[in-house]
Length: 173
Image (cartoon, rainbow, N blue to C red; front, side, top):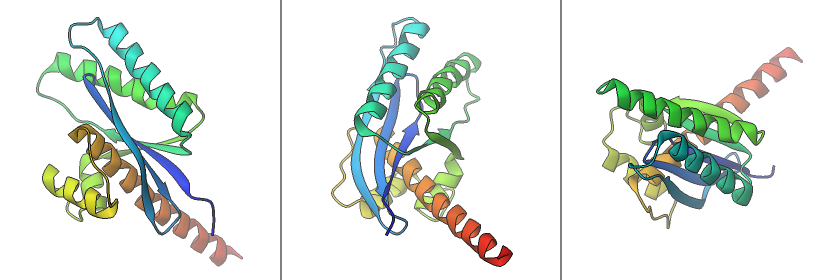
């Protein structure tokens, strides 16, 4: 059996960025760690982005993930908030890329479909399924639960990509 892959799931947010780490051996998932990197609303945007970057860099250095998965966020209510979230998301994408990790992005519906089987599942359903798939897990915040769901989604998609690549290689030989 191959060495398990450590997947870092990231749920971007300017105030709270959730992270969750799982190991996947191709068949089984194992919970490793979870947490949240938080910034203060009153601070200047560059300082908040720096806190996010430093926090993510620390998580990556301490936890040694092999790959990262980031939720693709869609916010259209307030243009100013959408721009700030976009900047935070840029930091969340950049930090693992700078560390040399493969980074994949998944939409919220794709994450829900992979974890629950329904792209319109409620947050509570996603959290219940994450608890089921990762026995013993507890969440500090909903952001960390979302990050674990993103990591689970990536594990499922990764397995599918690997199986497809193996089938193509076998057919070509």
